[in-house]
Amino acid sequence: MKTLLLAGASLIAAGNIAFAQGYWVTGNGATGRCEIVTSNPVVNSQVGGNVTFGSGPYRSDDDAKLARSTIRECPPEPRDQAPDADKADKDE
Image 1: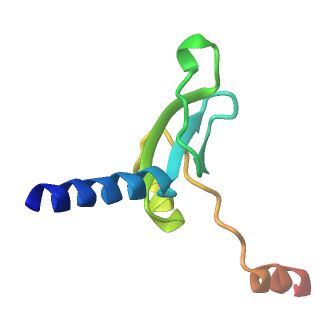
Image 2: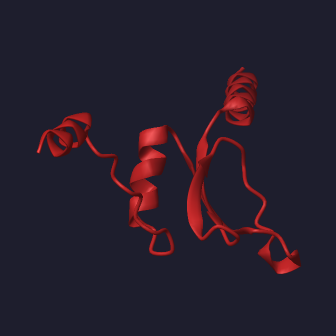
């Protein structure tokens, strides 16, 4: 009985892993940027491709963004300007 329960739990865990959606951080050699993708990347820089590395999976987009900020090869993302700042510049 214990063996059957253990086998069932293992099967359920394996099924959840197979259908789990994740986020990966990839380095693109052509653009020199890091991108967040939702499918497992294929690192293909050795054969002439543009993906130089892949890191992940991460559970959420926020986790992937945090990881991207800690990866040395990833340039910092430009900060979006606040709409109020643009409006203040036009008024002057």
